[in-house]
Image (cartoon, rainbow, N blue to C red; front, top):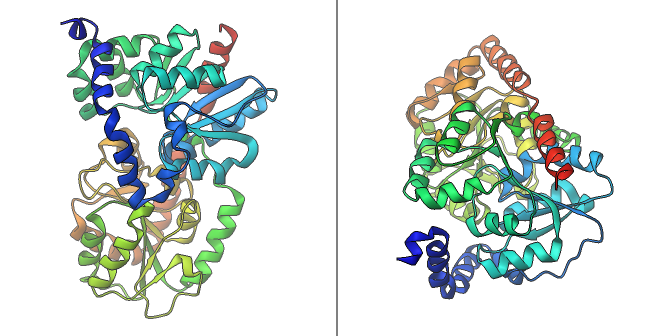
Length: 424
């Protein structure tokens, strides 16, 4: 009964039971993505890299969080030039995105698994003066270790869907203890803040969404211009961004019935380990295709381009006419639509956007996005858009306005960090 009286102990006990399986998990993931087998000691708290200056630590689990942190990382580097910025990741794609976006401006390692020995070694090695968890990264032993070592830990840009809140509510004592040990929580929306407060969060405020403050790098815009030339200036280009398993086939089947001439579908899967699988899906569906990695002009009879590259999403958005945001046709919760709106692209989303609920609803209300109920509804939506360029321009303008009206989260996040450092 001791474990139930002290829920974090029971949580840790379950983790210890899973420890023997972690090498097999890494091997399994490594079979699909070999990068999972790199830097394995870091996942247990062993690091070869050191920081000579005081450390500000941000945890950006994967690609989306790493890109969303761009404006905050820029402001932190300007405000604290004598500090080292440490980015931790969970996925190799997040780590690769960090290297591509920030180069030697930051140092990058994997966040260790949430075992007390591993997180304690991580914290004692880097000795951060403040820690920042982005979005929905709640690791109970890590939070407790920061509390014990008097390292202020913030949960910023926090979001918590109703579905995730119900899951955490199954473990009320554990969740209440974990959220209560954070120095502060700044949520994206009022609804997120309310859910986090109900689960035990203290000092909860609303900061907005960092993703609204992101700017497309000039190099990505130039690459987008080059991609457009490769795709063909006269083609009607639909980008299917961050698609998930099962969605590509639905899109291809729907576009079989399209009456649009000269349409080019560009598919960029969310996970790079699926590139080969998606290439086979396109071929089996009977479409002629080329790959982005070939870096060659697209032939007039090519129907689909497979976006098999990493770190070029802004360029893909810049090169397209209309963007469909994946993860939303099937119940994956959707992906970030803000970047497409920020580049003035009309946006289509499916019915499943619970991970980006408020941003999606606001984009639709602004006129910058359209929701389709299923894959078959994409074709008539495209036909309407491409037959009415004035309507496309109105959606483009509305999307830009939607992004501009929701900016400012970076300054509010920076204020939280400043306060935490000043009282550390």
